[in-house]
Length: 239
Image (cartoon, rainbow, N blue to C red):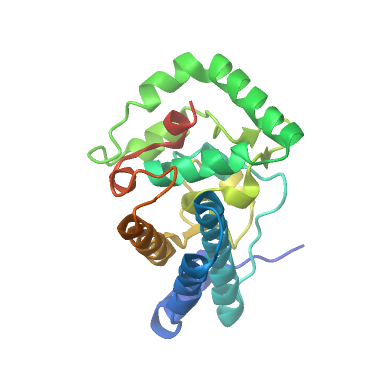
């Protein structure tokens, strides 16, 4: 029988991380500095910096896990976390939509068809949960989770994300290190961990790049800084 880490053991490792681990901020800013100097179309610069910064977040989580010997128990086809509300700003939403538009034609069409069916199926059920005030309602996550409505990007037949490599930070930073059944048995499992604090480095670097482009007079498909301050549910942005 496989033995999993206890909640106490996970908390102890997380405490050790907070006390001993130092985030390598240079990795984030190296990306935007590289693309600021690159001779390339503005859309290429934006999409490349976006996708590479997301990968740096994932790499940083792997580095933290290695430093305290944590191993995720999340597995392909496990999608319980894909029923939580995902909130991002308009800038991130535009990056995602532009990246999807640049997928190979067959993949892009599958995503577009999937989204059409998604909103046809869940449209009426989505209305009340997308009206939950995520700024003021302290229970909005639980209320959203109770609806059992999946993320727009989840293929519920395969339980796989249709845009995995560009999934937002809340998805990318949510991890389970104990028995996977805690996600199956609990709407809001207390054993799971979020590395969402990495959002500061990610968004800080992205903002610095957009500010650089803004001063140069061309931010491409991003309306900066306005897009950075508008937040909403992913299901609203992708509608």
